[in-house]
Length: 121
Image (tube, rainbow, N blue to C red):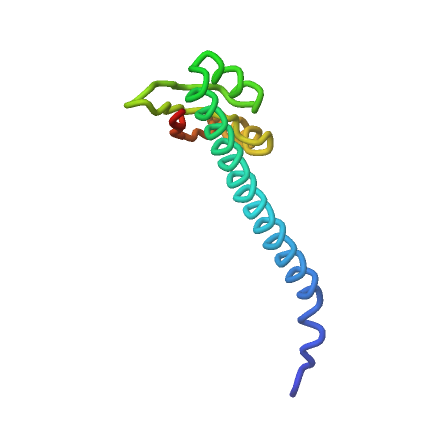
């Protein structure tokens, strides 16, 4: 006696479709988080570069204002052999900060260090 398999496979497509949708949503969220981190690191690097140029040209006091204008916080500013070395930090994108707070962690901060020297007159 041969039984039809049609009666036993009902709803499998729905379950597989939901599983595939969940996988796609999860992978999309992971890619979104990675892109947000990459963009945040790039923002920190640009802010550090501009702050270092300002520190080399006018000193650390003006460099602090440049860092704030870029949405960053100047963490350190020092001179080493005529070069200005600065470290700035920018807050993580809001999406990542919310996820961190939701999971009980502190919101991440993305930092970058840059060096700039004065050109000879």
